[in-house]
Image 1 (tube, rainbow over the protein chains, first blue to last red):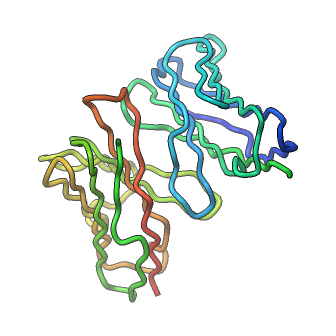
Image 2 (spheres, chains in turn orange, green):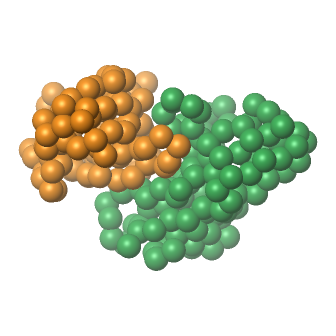
Length: 110
Length: 117
């Protein structure tokens, strides 16, 4: 069974700190990896996509992919209270369908 | 770019009635759209993949006769919840892929909150 796992949290970090969110997946054939942010009562919003090993940076966000270890992470630098949300990891295991993790709830404390 | 709209945003209906939800890609064409449902504090559950011009592909355990999907154009997919019951109350979200530009990225509509009384 193809799985994507995340720590449900909540992960609490002080304002201005780095938040580190992790995701592991079971299918070695996975091709594409995504991080979505979801505020309570809203739909997911795409933050980052990553397809090859290494780091990808976009503003305060950095996605890291390690296919050998089957994990993908998201770093949020200079965390702000507005970053408080649930972060969903999604993986495409060889097809275009997503397998979602259960999400990590992030709380940034002012 | 890559905007997906959904209508209605919220609907309350009586048990036994049918509800139609529309999903539109506003600035791109989408041959493939997806329908998800989400229960409170849970992750998204894929219900079906909507394919333009052909039948939808339903995930295991999803009743295709209850959740009717029509993808009649490259910018519109509809989900009809037939004979709705209180257990169908949920947050329904659609997404779409822009296959000409983005590699496997899905863009989500704002969701429809369905309450069945």
